[in-house]
Image (cartoon, rainbow, N blue to C red):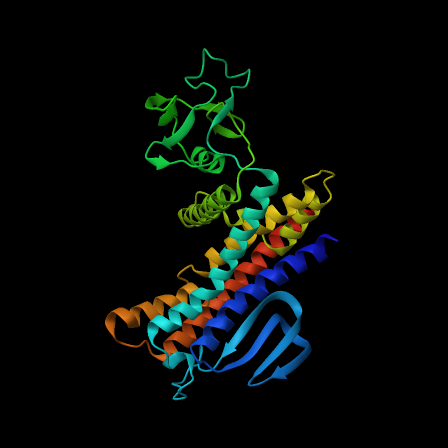
Length: 338
């Protein structure tokens, strides 16, 4: 069941991602040869107009094959992707990630409508953080931690996962803005904490949509921070999770007996789809972000990058991504066996 749920969830994400590319390409008159969901051997396909639509065996991605995209030779077809104006190519490339991020926003809105929203307003002080220890009181709204603006509990959580031993906290109390300087967060086995509980409340549709924007931004920032930690060596490659680990987590969440099990599964996929969208925009060859960099270079310099350079960079980038995928998957399987 966990495998099935994961395949369906990723299938929807991949479909929407490729649909974004497809719609934008069609809008600009690019010749679309194939719209494929999955990779590897074809299970079935059909043609409509100039485009072939196919479902392939391996549920590990998909693609839209455009005329002139990623070719090593120059293409003089007027409907070639490579012959479009740079700004149009950027829109087509960005459209896939946009659809993933949009899906995340819609899922977060639905989740917030059903599970409530958690603004950065203090509901209570746990017993272990008594009034003698904490400068906060019920009703305080956290506005800033150091110079970071705070909107939700997630913003607080992300900041505290990376904070120093002493921080500045800006709050609103009884309509007045106050700054608590040199506040020392409480150290626990799970990192630093403010030592408070934030309120959960029902919100209107507009409030839930606004908090969905905050949720989407939170995931985006978390992905960027995680990438920075990986590059800097703060965390190792074993911290990355692949399909095997995701199936395991989905199974754990889906098997939980709770009124919010369905919402929890949706939350997981909302986080993954935003993660997927942001990851695809990274400036790395073989990802949409890498191709966007080439298009931006042309837009700024008015000089086109040679097709063979783009093609070889994409092939090398794809090979490196496949190596990374194998390493992560082996790590997932090893952890599962342990």
